[in-house]
Amino acid sequence: MPAATAYTLTYPRTADRPEMSVRFTAAPDAKGTWTVERQPLGAAGRMLTGDQPRRYFGDEARVRAEATFRGLVVRECLHVGRLLQLDLEARDIRFRNGLPTLDGMDAGEWLDAMGTD
Image (tube, rainbow, N blue to C red):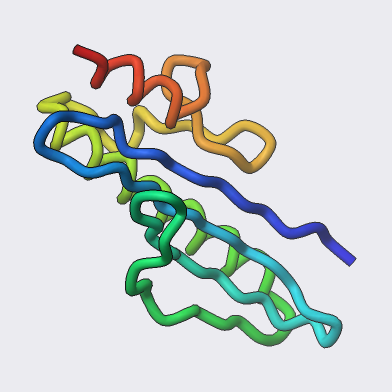
């Protein structure tokens, strides 16, 4: 059975923005159904209201789930980039081994470095 993919993007901390991160997962169950979730986390890992999980069935379930996972992660990276007043585009975010990168570095670490005062 294929392995689950998970990624957590932490928003760079600023004086006017509380600690926050968003966890993304794409995982199969025993029947082959893939579920993709986006779960925001507040300070101290407190769960915030998340999106409805997306479920995919059938022959193309894995491919569709991976595409959704990537789309959600890219959208969140672009959002963080806008908060930091960076001119990022979707094509700037590349995936290596299923995880997002910017300039060859983990996307979350790169964004955090750009957001450091």
